[in-house]
Image 1 (cartoon, helix red, strand yellow):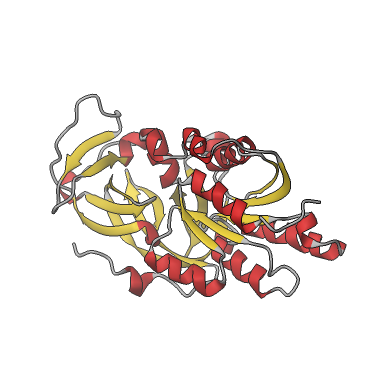
Image 2 (cartoon, rainbow, N blue to C red):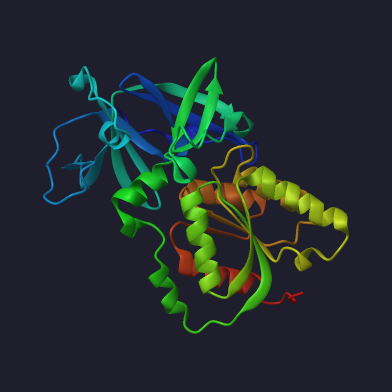
Length: 309
């Protein structure tokens, strides 16, 4: 199958919409943000790797690059395919890494609003750190959108945030500036907050999505106090239920009172196309996860001239 043309698929910035590719595993319906998809192709034999994670099927080399294949059915505890000769590899790119996810079929692509996305039930989908980013309803179908960042982080922890990277920043001092964080992943938000605390930013406010962050900012604005007395910097993911990071950035930068808040997009989706979108919306900086030390250094720079209240 041909590579996907993301330029044709990615949507206008700040519309709070996304494209979801539907796929099936053992007859169950799942989804992935098209912005993460590099190409889809028929499944093919792979080379097993000794001492690899049990959910890693092996590696293959479609062209000049060796790609790791993750067996999603095995990871999710679902049954194997009834027609393996028709299985599909979804080749992804996020966090500047390529992985192939072995699925059983691809259904199609849907355009939905993040407002249609709901956080999954914690009991059904694995508790606080479950495998689902959200549940989307489209034409009476419920689509479980998987947290691919978490899946990769579990299988290959070295690809996620590393606290040891903070050592390169040298000796740190305490800062009372408040950092607002919008991040729907429990795992990543905990790691981001821990990293900021270790770096001296002890005042953090965590929200689960862009809408919660926006509501908090509206409350701050209504209070009439200087904005940086409550928020020195906003760090936001892009993919989030209810309101995504692009929409949140647009809301902030279009607001005459809030527009001076530094906004950092901290996302696995940052590539050249996404950078152009972020720039159009006024984002002050865009950083690819898991570059946590660079995130801290950017917060240092963007808040340098602010007075801590």
